[in-house]
Length: 549
Ligand code: FBP
Image (cartoon, rainbow, N blue to C red; front, side, top):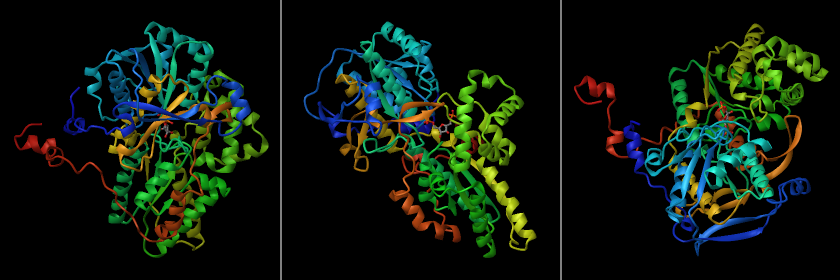
């Protein structure tokens, strides 16, 4: 693999391990835990992995182990730092016992079921240190939830003599990691299962999990891009930019970018839901802002839209809930119906109230909501072009206001969707350190015989050396929710807290940001560093002037 100069320089970055993970690693166990809700149901469903204590790694007496074979899986959407989790895991199992081996299952959980794997060796892994992406072993969204999958997985684990499996994923993947841990324990299969909190969406967090990895880097990349757009906007002063940001359900990414960049408006899905706003209410709010600025000669601005907005508009949310049930009820062959047949099925079965909402939606949005769900039962919100939908509706309303003499400015919109642009960026220093420590924690959880735990690293606003590593029982994060038409134990998704400080910070400033132009251009973080990285010309210029590429 040819390495860019950036990657060559970045290779030299050495992640800092928290003190507790540096030399001899001891373990401190806390009180027994309970799940966040529905305790009795969850205790009954997870008799072997319920009630375990939170653990922390501290300087102390390290437990030596025999060599151990470990498997690792990257699950779901890419997030910067995934490779560093694997390097942290690899280095630590080797440090504990140099004869330990690491196997990577290919293209997500499907690799375990289909027995597709590679052995991760020192030579192979060294190309991936501090790199973005998940291409070391690939990722996928196969849902590990059925007994036959667990058994197929066990066949290959037994064959490779793997005694522990690390699943790096979001809330759904960690939920399934715990189900697998419980199953193997119940069957007396000697395989520990450990999870790791990944997702750029930032919605896998709680008291014990301060952040999911990838959020830090992705929001920095998006903020740089939004800052560039703001500057362009402020230079030409003729466009309204509608920027949709990834994040599936939660609005954490949009909120963080708003706090970094001070756009004119940042919609927060959780607030839209709490205030019971309709699509029309949102459009009217935007129109009022556009008019206010236009009346003062500012026919331009920037609006941030969280990816999941559409699901949080209460009427549309109710429609989606019923559609989810209808699709689940129809069964697997729903996806084989033609678009016309799918629409027909939906129109025939929807309740009166939801049918009304369905019929008010533009065709492309109605179509997206009717498509088959992803393997976890989610609407694929990344495919719904909310940014275009909103600007189209704003334009239509402003035209109407024009006819009524209420608006005489101009409104020209440009659309952007930032998601894939940031998911594979090279990890920031924070994510590079955080992920390496998560991988090391996973290795120590394994060495201490734990299963059904998620690796965690806390105290992350301190210097990395002072971070605290450990593990949290996954069952302690569970509650029961409706998924695919059935009640299931799942990790509760952390949405934006409307009483939390980040949201309050937005509320304190947003009126000013909407009326004035208060843009902040955060810029890239990578312009500081060694000269061979920062002072290079383009390759084109170098080649044109007789130099080397
Ligand atoms: P995870 O929850 O698996 O980390 O994925 C997050 C995400 O990036 C969302 O922000 C986005 O809605 C979704 O993945 C897109 O999915 P896909 O990668 O399948 O296009």
